[in-house]
Image (cartoon, rainbow, N blue to C red; front, top):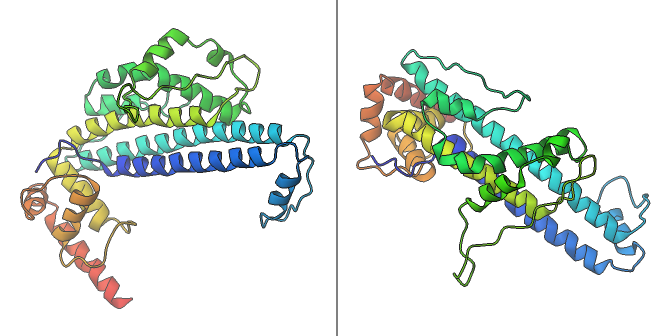
Length: 315
């Protein structure tokens, strides 16, 4: 069984949520910029018409001083919300990754311990590295960029997007070096890497002039850290741990959106998760049986699969 490029269940969920968010940012921005272009110099007529036809109870009862300023303010506000959202997704991912590790360690009678938050109350992903006994060498270059966007997230969530002194005092040279280290795809011509957007000018006590491009960059920074956590988690789980994770979500848990009722036996359900969701390469269809027997969980999986099958028949 080859797990060298494997996904964990939490990372796959984060990956898909981040992709959906990326599409949302780009579609929303495209639509608002198009409205901004078409509403130029029309005294707000187009925007009032669109708002009144939105199917919401507010009708067109609002004051609009400038279409352009209103749409720029809307994009700035949304950009802050999007950065706050990606960190919420990231925190959920870290929490679920710790949960997977805790469930696996419990089989051997071990419990996880360690602080889960930093001094400011942010969910700290650093704890998972200590839990698996791994270094943060693979993400050291990303950490200043992560901290920068975490400060923006805090401003968006708790300060109405008004820049904090900590954000205004951030070391820009360190930030530039961190962002330059991010893996980037080549441009369409293949001659150079995709350029990074210019960062917003930060003034303490003033609203941060965010743009959607900054939100996309923030999601990518979070993704880069999340990918390294996934690698460390997969290494800590090993083959047996990944098989048990697949069994947990395909059979043992009460439900999963990707679960199918067409599987004829438990190993078929587990292998579907291993192949299709976790990107694990199997040498044979019986490998999962061997691993689950080795950790004393195969009979539990078989009994639960039979119970689920009986419940489907009953309904």
